Image (cartoon, rainbow, N blue to C red; front, side):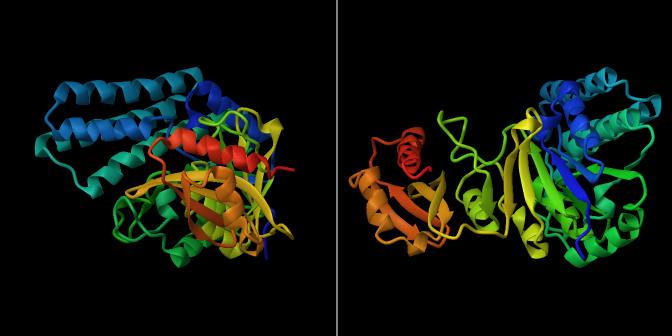
Length: 385
């Protein structure tokens, strides 16, 4: 039976600094049904951790020390602004010590393994979630804020940097560690992206895997909703960084959202929806900057008839692939011909059609990534109601 509880995940842009974390805390405070909060690393931290590994492996001690100190300063400054408790400051200091030690280890060995990289990656989520847990302790003094190490719950294979979740073990661990406390006034704060194999080694679910973590936690407690909080108010009809006149889509089916993600859209991680689809759990995508603007709800429901909702792009070895996403596309008569004519028959060539996507290869060498996307989005706009 589905529970009433909500899992809320906050991405890197949503927890990038102290002000952003405060906005997230207000969203959490405003919904007493939120029981698990999944936190990403602060914005750009994962990239910085990669710089640490690269600099250390090349013997560039100066860059290693500079980037390490930047990371430490960033998190210490957030901690100071959020009035973090002395006990948690001590825990943060220990994590900073781990960061330094890993850097020194790579520097000495002049190389790093995927296993070492996962240990390094984990520090981003562990630091940000630690700070968020203490902020919530301060803001919600009557709640029991349980700072949960995701590695106790998310058990995976030993495929470092691309670990496969072990669903039965995750369910078993959640049944022991989380579910008995859901009716209590307890709020779990944990990490996205990371897990542990059966030997206790830290693993990761692949870059941008925090959404996947939230879905796995949602599946494990049979949540009523999984929320993905980012810096845009939902899933857009195209990339809002490149296209000016995007519309935000109110409703998507699991299949449509998965197609968008697989074919190039950046809002959702492609595997995010697998666990929620298995348990038929809705997924909400919204903006932590402007939660009042609403967002996109992803469910099993599909529109009754044909509709086009979004357009995305992928760069492949053979060139750019433009894809339109929607419902019942394979039932629309002459859709490929209609779209190809609007796109420009000399610039786009039909590639593939499914129930939720239709794709075209860009054949004109005068089209770059941005110009082809703009052309496709202008065509899509004709189908907006």
